[in-house]
Length: 324
Image (cartoon, rainbow, N blue to C red; front, side, top):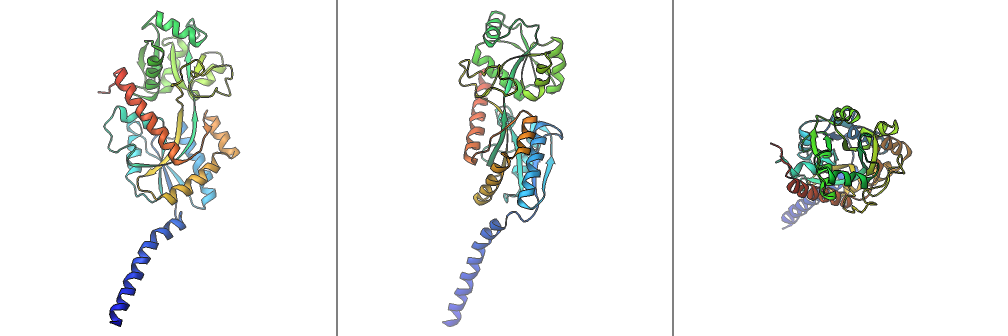
């Protein structure tokens, strides 16, 4: 009887120890280096945002935070690697707006919503409707009127078929009931020379790729996406101001973790990162890439990703965007 009772006590103690182990592991988090997988090449906007974030996070948690660039397949290679890692908080994925675009076109080896746990939106920035000055338009109304009166006469460039710029411009055409000719390039940098020369007349590009040419007077800004005007171009109205209230889309960057990452770990990361996006060094680095710090809750970031993903599925169907 006594022996049986003692055996039960040992069993209960063992079970209690097993139950307490995850809690102790979460309390001790992080106890080793954290890896942020960036699914794009070194030197781009996503990479810079990740490196600034990693540096500041490492200083706060007392552990190294390593940026691991894994480019390929529009970001899917790195995303697949990250989302199939152990859900222990030691592997994070830097995601950008293209993360919500890819499911509209590709059969991915992961579920972009179901296989991730949102951590935080780090920052966002506008797209700029930019034209070659030879195009006889100076305002959004003039551009829309001209495009409607001359269907197919304006050519727009994109960073590639099915890429973010392509989707944004297709959404713009659907919103404004206009039709322009798509000229795909291998990347944003490749289309700029043709936009400057007038071979193409328009791009709905990110501020980082077009702003210096706008500042030099080589290109003309017509409008910006998002809810707020760009601080560097306060005279340029938003599409929302012009009445296109559903065109409040911005280019965003954020962090997610693999599905199943404990809530306590996500909460710790979210709290630290909400502080980081508000410090002067991070704000300065983000703004240099024309991103503005956001922060917020994991739930808010999930809603943003899902909302964009749903939107791009609709745009792909309405514009008949397909990648062979």
